Amino acid sequence: MNVLVINCGSSSLKYQVINSDSEAVLAKGLCERIGIDGRLVYQPAGGEKEITEAAMPTHKQAIQMVIDALMNEKTGVIKSLDEIGAVGHRVVHGGEKFAASAIITDEMIKVVDECSDLAPLHNPANLIGVRACQELMPNTPMVGVFDTAFHQTMPKEAYLYGVPYEYYEKYAVRKYGFHGTSHSYVSKRAAAILNKPYEELKTIVCHLGNGASICAVKNGESVDTSMGLSPLEGLVMGTRSGDIDPSAVEFLAKKEGLDLAGILNVLNKKSGVLGLSGVSSDFRDLETATNEGNERAKAATQVFVYRVIKYIGAYAAAMNGVDCICFTAGVGENDSNIRKAVCKNLSYLGIQIDEAANAKRGEEIVISTPDSKVKVLVIPTNEELAIARETVALVK
Ligand code: ADP
Image (cartoon, rainbow, N blue to C red; front, top):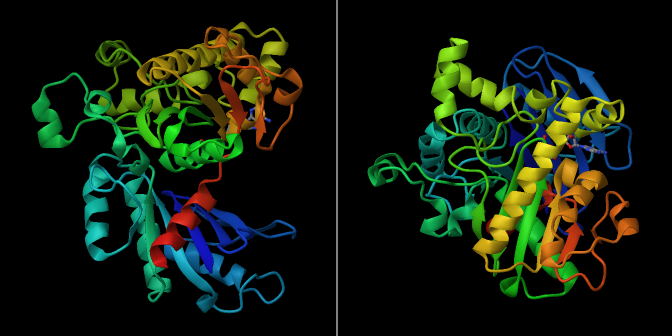
């Protein structure tokens, strides 16, 4: 079966068509600047990337353009829409209602809509993508795959905040966690690569991208993760602050003459390694600047690494041990210096890194030495494939 995987944001939409039998990507791309002007990127497997500038006032029009590209006589990969057996949608927040992926129904859309309070930037955009696809493909089954679902196994002591309990009861204020599809995929791959039963492993997954989070996976279940009620908590990220004393919010609001929304905008978009360095949110730029003697870029990288080291320590303690540590996402997969800097401080766990293995890029690889007590792996994440698998499992 061919599955169309959709990751819909407020002004952009990423897509892939994956054949679930071969797990091959038939075509992929994205729509950008939806509602502004519009740009479609389309790439069939083994073919050139095509870029089309074209008006895309709505998400429905964007998806129609994707469908047209997929069915294009010359460069398309399907002849008719019947060749798409199902659509898998990434949905960011499923609240406490969804501990697993689910077939999209009117009832499900209603519940996701209710969760919009908790993810105002993401859920409404995800639902716009769902509705647009439903209009264009009314007979195709659709599945919602939630970023939060994998973390619904966290115990109370991990997900409750130390605030009045009625806030949890009344408003569902708690830690939810994100990147669940990635943490689940990577921790399962780690077990397969190490040839160990997933249900018996203690794994720490470091998903280090522009958004970054760490997850403790014990016996196949997420037991803690660094992001919280929203994706702002936890690690220092590309542009997000991660953990910060809540008092700083009021303090800065007064000093800077900003309201709450203004401060949250700073914490989400102008903080992290971008805010610290004043250079960039991209670790490649930080490395270049550091090599040119930029002290702030160097400090920003050190702060990032230090926070990762602390969370790994916390999760090793939370699980009373750790068998393997995985690095994934843009930084985790590509930046051997960051991995080296993190692992240098993990010798207390008996971790030793094989420098030659760590220097490799873009492949699944064990980067610890054979006698390292804890195994360290680089595993490229593949959220689209994970969404396609979940989709097929539910539709079949
Ligand atoms: P997201 O999905 O959260 O947008 P990604 O997982 O794609 O993020 O990661 C993007 C980040 O990965 C970039 O901002 C950059 O910092 C980092 N990155 C990508 N390639 C490299 C590389 N070759 N070396 C170092 N960092 C890289």
